[in-house]
Length: 288
Image (cartoon, rainbow, N blue to C red):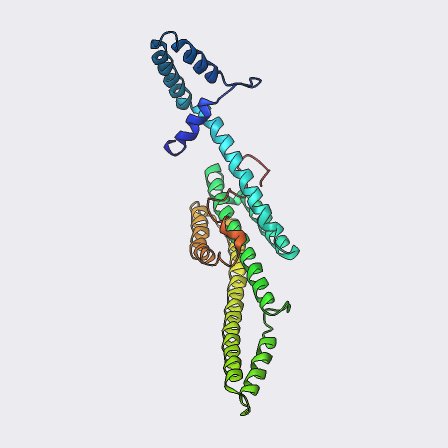
């Protein structure tokens, strides 16, 4: 409650019943502000009544639940917009791959074998929501890295193709072997060769990052499949907790690596903060 106290207070201050255009609290404050000009003592009365009103509202569990519901709805809408924006920048194959994993995770939460309690299902849904979010970040980072390599190759399709740079390097080396070059031209060609070597090293580093991302994407997919298989086969009441712990342990290193790479993808720079919503809200078949 303490973390959301300012939001509860703000909601109480501006609360208004359905159908009213102006919050009654504002009307009351206006009345006492006007009466106080006639009798300043009424300002103290108004201040006391305002504090009592705010305390009563914030202390009400029903009121806090209403505010919490609005906050959760707003957070979910914000996450939906964030995910949609990132998905819009992906190619169709990556979008389909993400949606397939997302639907698989939602189906898992509905599995009877996950556990009978809503708390267990909610915990699993939250853990899977984080896993799906990491998966999307990996897809975005991969596409940005592939695009970087392609731009470096002048639009060449495959990240494996570094032949154009290699051919230019070979040509420069051939020219530098000539004994008829003047000093200025030789210095210029040597400078070009040094830059090409640096570019080729950058291309190799990018290709290695793409290999790592591909491996991490496959690992996430295998993790989800393993969790589902364990959920179906296990008859241990503590198995659900272990599955949740396994998902959480998958995220740490990968999430930090993505943060380290966010300079590659400007799309992720403003999207990494916050906690993603669960893949499926308990008591609802709807999700983001």
